[in-house]
Length: 314
Image (cartoon, rainbow, N blue to C red):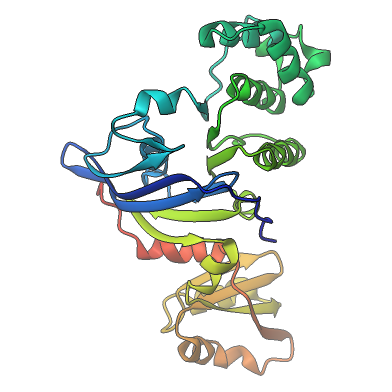
């Protein structure tokens, strides 16, 4: 289900034609994105495709080689230092001091930001993330989910207007992931804008809008429903026996772009509906099989876009 959109107060980010090169490689190629205030905006794409670089360009953490725009009402080129002071950045790698307690880590972060009334700020963050009962526990003793909460508490300690999350739930169990996203939606409801990169399709579906970036190119963006509808994909669901044999036989047939087994079902997708049905025709009359039309999933679209993209580092 697509996430309900938060009330917007104008664009938090509005950039046009962003380009970033490292040596001879163009890592971000002519990307334009608009993100509304209070929006959770998700970035999907293959590993090494430029998602993190794009996010850093959007908020002035990196200077583009070309392009322009604003973040939080500030110019991403001329006012990047002012933007950075209003950003909370949660990296994929846990980067806090494992020999300090949760409260000591947060107090250290508060000192670095020069925050007044540190004790009150730390106490608020502990309460908000459910960390108060563990405040004296060493960070190195925490499980992945609790480390994630500590990292998020540190990111929001200085009251940022923009939160950057770089694959924040990698290696975290489903319950902790759901609790994390519930908190992200509460923060967005309070007006915080969130940019998040993820490989989890269920997390992408909790974003208000998503962008798919493949090797520096923005291939599609919009709500999840829009991205699926505009993919041009048609999908057939095959249920019954012998699915592995059918999947092998369908590989490479005209009209079949993707074949994927989901337990006792087979997803078969392509952009030419007539060709797709002709490819499946040999199995259409079998009594032990059911072939029905179904909506493509976001994962179907993800794989479809990956197959269309070219790795610019090859």
